[in-house]
Image (cartoon, rainbow, N blue to C red; front, side):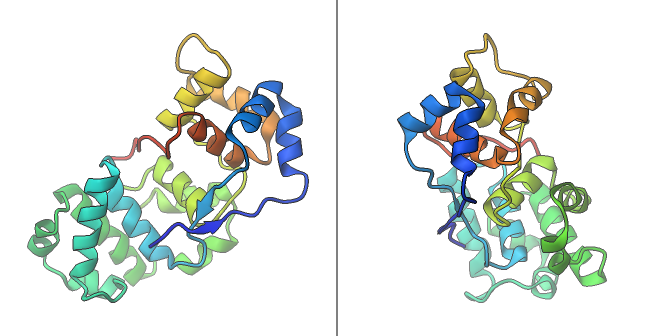
Length: 216
């Protein structure tokens, strides 16, 4: 799954962000035009499976394991039924840890039994999407927020537990230490309803994508 569609901003969004804080305006001038790309239009299941596989791994290692995982299904998109029919030993052989194997299976089992209806996620607000996804083993708030940003393309997601956001905020807002989530809530408030854009520019201030997931 490629994250290739550039997220389109509403008219006035960037001006709102610039006006909210001169330090962010200076960062925008330094970084330049936003290039936040999302996978909107790709299947929700594919995005969530990828998210689980990529947790707490470097990009190259994660991409290798994700490729092996997809290869188990002969190039066809994995379906919940096919994932559940794949032996645990086979999933582990592709490089998934036992924890991720159980997470992948739990996700698919919830879809099969109807307790998780992926088609309904688009109609939910951000918090409802998070509340729905964190019921799945191995998907925590951080992973749900990344799904909102990079898959659903939501504009006001503020991942205060992300290490990249914390480091970027410390750099841009010149805090003595990494700001806590509660401090970031206060720092981010003036930028609503476009806090996804702030997260993007803070990542760009470090020239990297999200640093880490706090999900197990």
